[in-house]
Length: 409
Image (cartoon, rainbow, N blue to C red; front, side, top):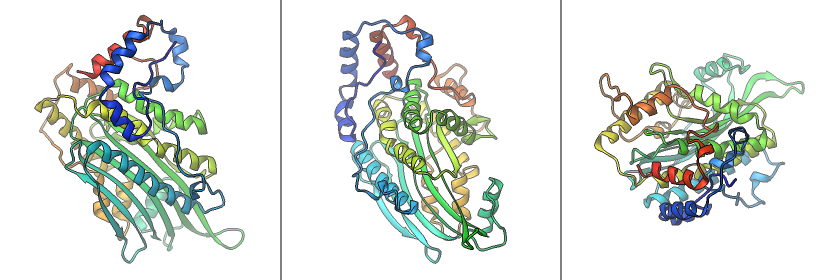
């Protein structure tokens, strides 16, 4: 069987743009050429996640002489090189889609150590607000941060001056069109002295990775969620096939909004406190960070110009309100940033949408698209299980026509 496959063949942002205009035509032509039966359901359950991709994944074009590949270099330096490169890569790709340039703010953590670079696009053609931030900070952990880390199992001495180092890249993008989803990602590396000495009499240090990527649609397109999850499953499987299901479940739990009894979005993958800082783990993080444009641009280009109503825009703003609630009440990164002396508030709150809405006692009409989306947010879905469309009864051509029909709604 020829699985549901790409219609946009090219890996770069520029090529994505060139292919976007011909998607409907390509769907029709490709569908007309195919007339092959599908495999049975039992076989489909074992199929590779590639069958859910809108397009093939891009190749890693990072020069092989980059410090990112230097296994003798300190992890701090390798991680810093990676996050700055990824920031540049993502900004370039998004600028091509939006047509407006990001504003760049370089900042220093005066009196405390370190700084960062924030790249912001506001009031764009495609995005109401998009931000990609990099931070590299060091200093002494404040008591609130030590307490938070101890609650997560970190064996740290309280009441002592604990030097730390942290670097990471964080991204949130809020499109104008309510049919286009918001994306968030974060990849970070952390080192902290425990307040004890090791066997050699040197300060004992703990280090770990954290991060993930997740998608937040206002209006659910199942095929978009499947594509997004498939991209990251492919990358995580290179490290260990057990990682995706574990990190997918962790993501669903982390981005849950308790007081609303619903998730922020349709998830993705999330991990924290990964104390395995081996070469394999670092390359896994590199692969996932490099996949942002692959995971998001094919979705964005299908949704950014779709028609929508004023009522649908209002629903998007209500969902943006949920985004704000999670970020300021529950997000660990926001809490850590606000508790760290000298932090740059503008960069910490970069993730918040430009506009949001809170309506008293709002409830979507039962059976509406809004309601169906909300039900999924209340009950996490295994996006890479058997598709909703019964492939057993559809040829590949009919499947593609069905996807095209749904995308045109």
